[in-house]
Image (spheres, one colour):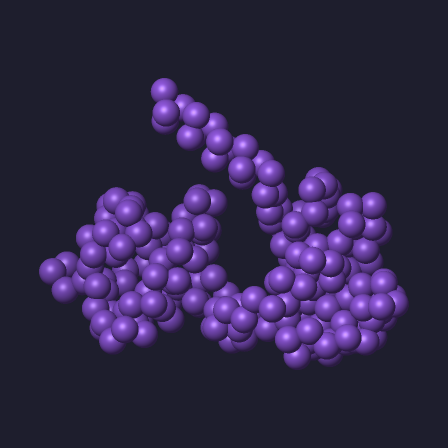
Length: 209
């Protein structure tokens, strides 16, 4: 695919998929862009534009077949099969993510968690084993793992990420408040709660005025 896809379009694909999954479970088989827009409070034209980057999925006057659109979006995102991931750092946030059962429904399986705390190593949390962080390469060998969730202390992250890249991890969901400079082949998405809250407060303050 040679077209440059806007980042916000990629983010919205996940929102569309979540909504379509819910509607499909309720027994609905077709949906129009206007109906989908009503569910998500989005402009139908924006939905049609987002989807048009990847092909034609609906028919005018008939809307979208939900089962086909779900499959198409999953293929675009890259989750046609279950994706194995690992979690690094089993503190309070790490434990919460391990117990977040909805991940499996969305096509992601945390196959192992890692920490350096002797009191955590060897524990089982929501059927997921916690291993010594020094044994990452040994534990994940042959499991086709490309992504890792990072929830470890900031002072440990740079060395560990470099080690993970060396053993083939190419994608990171980073909850650690630190900026990482990685090669172009490696993708990192930063989740910064404090910045999001600050943005929220800005909008609330300006709306009130």
